Amino acid sequence: MRNTAGPVFLADCPTRLAVEIISDKWTVLVLFGLSQQPRRHGELVDLIGGISRKVLTQTLRRLQQYGLVERHAEAPRRVEYSLTDLGRTLVEPIEVLTNWARDHGGAIADFQEAAEAAP
Image 1 (tube, helix red, strand yellow):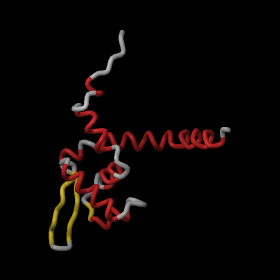
Image 2 (image 1 turned 30 degrees about the horizontal axis):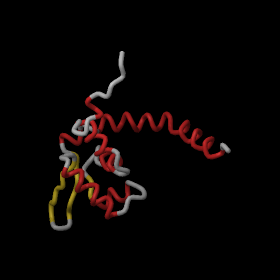
Image 3 (image 1 turned 60 degrees about the horizontal axis):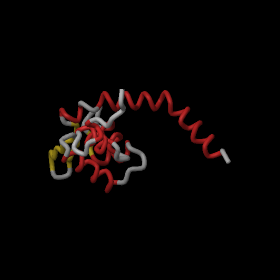
C-alpha cells in the first residue's frame, strides 16, 4: 500500500482548523477551565496559572469567534464566560488528553532530562 497524503494534509481540511484552534498555548486550559461551570474573567486568571489578563481576553475573544465560548453580561461589571454546545463537544477529548498527560508526563520529563544531559 502506498503512503500518500490524505485530506488532512490539504490546506482547507477541517482537521487543520481544529489543530490550529487547540494548538494555542492557552486554549485548552481556558476550555477546560470553563468545562465545569461558567466563570468570570478574574476567576479564570486565578485558575490558570501564568496567563495574563490581556492574553486571556484575546483567547476568549478568539474562542467566541470560533463559536466555542459565549460571553454573558448580566450587569455592567458582571460578565461570565461559558462553553457553547459546540465548545462542550471538546470537553471529552480534552479530558482524554489530560489523562494521557497525567499518565505519561513523568516519562516525558525523564526523556527531556536525558536529552539535556546527553553530550
